[in-house]
Image 1 (tube, rainbow, N blue to C red):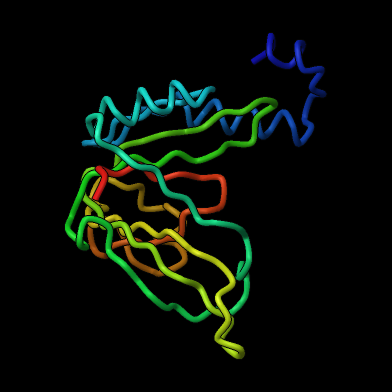
Image 2 (cartoon, rainbow, N blue to C red; image 1 turned 135 degrees about the vertical axis):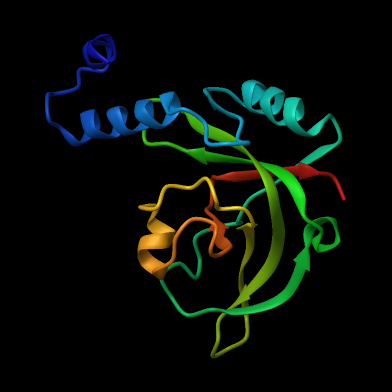
Length: 174
Protein backbone atom coordinates (compact mmCIF):
# COMPACT_ATOMS: atom_id res chain seq x y z
CA UNK A 1 0.00 0.00 0.00
CA UNK A 2 2.75 2.46 0.94
CA UNK A 3 4.58 1.76 -2.31
CA UNK A 4 1.39 2.30 -4.33
CA UNK A 5 0.69 5.55 -2.49
CA UNK A 6 4.16 6.78 -3.43
CA UNK A 7 3.92 5.75 -7.09
CA UNK A 8 0.49 7.36 -7.56
CA UNK A 9 1.17 10.30 -5.21
CA UNK A 10 -1.83 9.48 -3.01
CA UNK A 11 -2.42 11.67 0.04
CA UNK A 12 -3.07 10.17 3.45
CA UNK A 13 -6.81 9.90 4.29
CA UNK A 14 -7.79 10.97 0.76
CA UNK A 15 -10.68 9.45 -1.18
CA UNK A 16 -8.11 7.83 -3.50
CA UNK A 17 -6.42 6.14 -0.53
CA UNK A 18 -9.80 4.81 0.64
CA UNK A 19 -10.59 3.46 -2.86
CA UNK A 20 -7.20 1.74 -3.08
CA UNK A 21 -7.59 0.20 0.40
CA UNK A 22 -11.12 -1.02 -0.39
CA UNK A 23 -9.99 -2.56 -3.69
CA UNK A 24 -6.98 -4.26 -2.10
CA UNK A 25 -9.13 -5.58 0.76
CA UNK A 26 -11.60 -7.08 -1.72
CA UNK A 27 -8.80 -8.60 -3.79
CA UNK A 28 -7.12 -10.10 -0.71
CA UNK A 29 -10.34 -11.28 0.97
CA UNK A 30 -10.56 -15.03 1.49
CA UNK A 31 -13.05 -16.47 -1.04
CA UNK A 32 -16.38 -17.57 0.34
CA UNK A 33 -17.30 -21.25 0.28
CA UNK A 34 -17.43 -22.58 -3.31
CA UNK A 35 -16.21 -19.25 -4.74
CA UNK A 36 -13.09 -18.87 -6.84
CA UNK A 37 -11.86 -15.29 -7.22
CA UNK A 38 -9.06 -13.26 -8.74
CA UNK A 39 -8.29 -9.61 -9.37
CA UNK A 40 -7.11 -9.00 -12.91
CA UNK A 41 -5.48 -6.01 -14.57
CA UNK A 42 -5.84 -6.99 -18.22
CA UNK A 43 -8.38 -8.44 -20.62
CA UNK A 44 -6.04 -11.39 -21.22
CA UNK A 45 -6.02 -12.24 -17.50
CA UNK A 46 -9.80 -11.90 -17.37
CA UNK A 47 -10.26 -14.29 -20.30
CA UNK A 48 -7.78 -16.75 -18.76
CA UNK A 49 -9.67 -16.68 -15.45
CA UNK A 50 -13.13 -17.04 -17.03
CA UNK A 51 -12.02 -19.93 -19.25
CA UNK A 52 -10.26 -21.66 -16.33
CA UNK A 53 -13.67 -21.84 -14.60
CA UNK A 54 -16.05 -22.31 -17.55
CA UNK A 55 -13.97 -23.86 -20.34
CA UNK A 56 -13.20 -22.34 -23.71
CA UNK A 57 -16.74 -22.04 -25.16
CA UNK A 58 -17.64 -18.77 -23.40
CA UNK A 59 -19.34 -15.50 -24.14
CA UNK A 60 -19.38 -12.23 -22.23
CA UNK A 61 -22.29 -9.86 -21.59
CA UNK A 62 -22.73 -6.46 -20.03
CA UNK A 63 -25.48 -3.91 -19.64
CA UNK A 64 -25.27 -1.64 -22.67
CA UNK A 65 -25.26 1.77 -20.96
CA UNK A 66 -26.54 3.64 -17.89
CA UNK A 67 -29.87 4.74 -19.39
CA UNK A 68 -32.67 4.03 -16.91
CA UNK A 69 -30.44 4.12 -13.84
CA UNK A 70 -32.22 5.42 -10.73
CA UNK A 71 -35.49 5.68 -12.69
CA UNK A 72 -38.60 3.59 -13.13
CA UNK A 73 -38.26 1.25 -16.07
CA UNK A 74 -40.37 -1.38 -17.78
CA UNK A 75 -38.96 -4.79 -18.74
CA UNK A 76 -39.56 -6.31 -22.15
CA UNK A 77 -38.14 -9.28 -24.04
CA UNK A 78 -36.66 -11.02 -20.97
CA UNK A 79 -34.50 -13.97 -22.01
CA UNK A 80 -32.92 -16.54 -19.73
CA UNK A 81 -29.35 -17.33 -20.74
CA UNK A 82 -28.91 -21.05 -21.46
CA UNK A 83 -32.72 -21.30 -21.44
CA UNK A 84 -32.95 -19.99 -17.86
CA UNK A 85 -31.16 -23.04 -16.44
CA UNK A 86 -29.10 -22.86 -13.26
CA UNK A 87 -25.56 -22.30 -14.49
CA UNK A 88 -22.10 -21.40 -13.31
CA UNK A 89 -20.86 -18.01 -14.42
CA UNK A 90 -18.01 -15.61 -13.78
CA UNK A 91 -18.70 -11.99 -12.82
CA UNK A 92 -16.07 -9.30 -13.24
CA UNK A 93 -16.61 -5.99 -11.47
CA UNK A 94 -14.60 -2.86 -12.23
CA UNK A 95 -12.98 -1.49 -9.07
CA UNK A 96 -12.03 2.04 -8.14
CA UNK A 97 -8.27 1.96 -8.54
CA UNK A 98 -5.59 4.17 -10.14
CA UNK A 99 -5.45 1.78 -13.11
CA UNK A 100 -7.77 -0.75 -14.69
CA UNK A 101 -8.53 -3.48 -12.15
CA UNK A 102 -11.40 -5.96 -12.16
CA UNK A 103 -12.51 -8.17 -9.29
CA UNK A 104 -13.63 -11.43 -10.90
CA UNK A 105 -15.32 -14.33 -9.13
CA UNK A 106 -17.16 -17.50 -9.95
CA UNK A 107 -20.87 -17.73 -9.28
CA UNK A 108 -21.49 -21.46 -8.88
CA UNK A 109 -25.31 -21.47 -8.82
CA UNK A 110 -27.16 -18.74 -10.63
CA UNK A 111 -29.41 -17.70 -13.44
CA UNK A 112 -28.47 -14.98 -15.92
CA UNK A 113 -31.00 -12.88 -17.84
CA UNK A 114 -30.98 -10.29 -20.59
CA UNK A 115 -33.85 -7.83 -20.95
CA UNK A 116 -34.81 -4.80 -22.97
CA UNK A 117 -35.41 -1.84 -20.66
CA UNK A 118 -38.19 0.49 -21.75
CA UNK A 119 -39.27 3.96 -20.76
CA UNK A 120 -42.57 3.23 -18.94
CA UNK A 121 -44.44 6.16 -20.53
CA UNK A 122 -43.30 6.00 -24.16
CA UNK A 123 -42.50 2.25 -24.23
CA UNK A 124 -39.32 3.13 -26.17
CA UNK A 125 -36.32 0.89 -25.61
CA UNK A 126 -33.68 2.80 -23.63
CA UNK A 127 -31.22 0.03 -22.74
CA UNK A 128 -30.35 -3.66 -22.89
CA UNK A 129 -29.72 -4.92 -19.37
CA UNK A 130 -28.05 -8.03 -18.00
CA UNK A 131 -29.00 -9.39 -14.58
CA UNK A 132 -27.83 -12.28 -12.41
CA UNK A 133 -29.70 -14.13 -9.70
CA UNK A 134 -27.56 -15.73 -6.98
CA UNK A 135 -29.44 -18.82 -5.83
CA UNK A 136 -27.18 -19.90 -2.96
CA UNK A 137 -26.53 -17.11 -0.46
CA UNK A 138 -25.80 -19.38 2.53
CA UNK A 139 -22.13 -18.37 2.73
CA UNK A 140 -22.74 -14.62 2.33
CA UNK A 141 -22.09 -12.24 5.20
CA UNK A 142 -25.20 -11.40 7.24
CA UNK A 143 -24.31 -7.73 6.81
CA UNK A 144 -24.23 -7.94 3.00
CA UNK A 145 -26.02 -4.90 1.56
CA UNK A 146 -28.77 -7.03 -0.01
CA UNK A 147 -29.71 -8.54 3.35
CA UNK A 148 -29.52 -5.20 5.14
CA UNK A 149 -31.75 -3.61 2.48
CA UNK A 150 -34.26 -6.46 2.22
CA UNK A 151 -34.36 -7.57 5.86
CA UNK A 152 -33.34 -11.20 5.32
CA UNK A 153 -30.21 -13.20 5.98
CA UNK A 154 -27.90 -15.73 4.35
CA UNK A 155 -29.63 -18.67 2.70
CA UNK A 156 -33.13 -17.25 3.20
CA UNK A 157 -33.51 -15.52 -0.19
CA UNK A 158 -32.10 -15.44 -3.67
CA UNK A 159 -30.41 -12.17 -4.59
CA UNK A 160 -30.79 -10.74 -8.08
CA UNK A 161 -29.09 -7.62 -9.38
CA UNK A 162 -28.23 -5.83 -12.59
CA UNK A 163 -24.75 -6.07 -14.04
CA UNK A 164 -23.58 -2.48 -14.37
CA UNK A 165 -22.22 -0.95 -17.54
CA UNK A 166 -18.49 -1.85 -17.71
CA UNK A 167 -18.99 -4.87 -15.43
CA UNK A 168 -19.12 -8.21 -17.21
CA UNK A 169 -20.67 -11.62 -16.80
CA UNK A 170 -19.12 -14.62 -18.53
CA UNK A 171 -21.20 -17.73 -19.28
CA UNK A 172 -20.92 -20.82 -21.41
CA UNK A 173 -22.10 -19.80 -24.88
CA UNK A 174 -25.77 -20.60 -25.66
